[in-house]
Length: 312
Image (cartoon, rainbow, N blue to C red; front, side, top):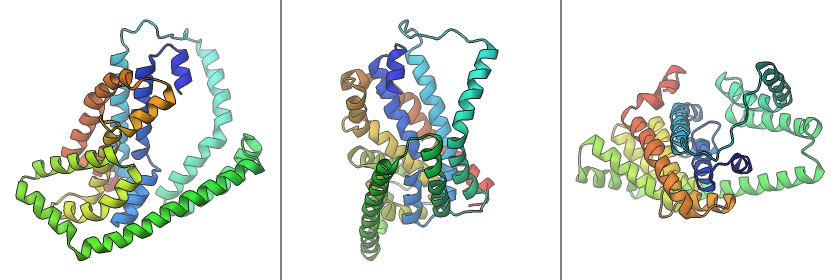
């Protein structure tokens, strides 16, 4: 996306900051591997966690877009294409849609199969892989024997690493329970305050700090066994916590001084971090924090869809 934004005259700092923030929508918009891991470790429904993050993800997406429009409202360097005639536009849209249909069917299979109850998430993933191989090979011609071999090796390596991490986390989770670590954390929180509003603020700050210093997968695997029993005792729904955790970890990834995604976006986009800091702070103040506050103190935002589909 970055070359297109640069060609259109968008400042490098704003473009890199926006895409760094927007890439973290993958934590919220299903199917998200992070929600699958959280559900597995925390003993929750994968479908409920998927549904809990959809509306927060949409809110964040709208706020990021609105903030971007505000930041660039007076930028005269941005090149706007001349408006195409409706007939030309519809013809172009039709051709593009026709080419995209085989690829669009894949998420339909995954989400449609899961939410209709026909398939479990694991079965849907397997069916999607079986469908994607001939589509990528025959229709889009982006797969050959060499690339498929590389994909299988990468997938096997990644799956093996995750399984080893899960194995270690389950051992660690057992130790947490034996030593009553969740109870200690709960007692610590209650010693600070018995006000639920204040306690949720502390939990949010804790998750943001974790997101600043750890990658999202490690953060979920390490904190979930501790926090789920604690937040359940505080009366916070674990499905609601799934949305809070995703937003907080995403916010931590772009919050200075650590901000791993900010530095990664700088390297990929070729934009100095100094140029990205100001727009990133705007995205944090006008998009990330409002989304976090809304979802934190209006639980119905994240619990509406799981309730509607009968998962909680």
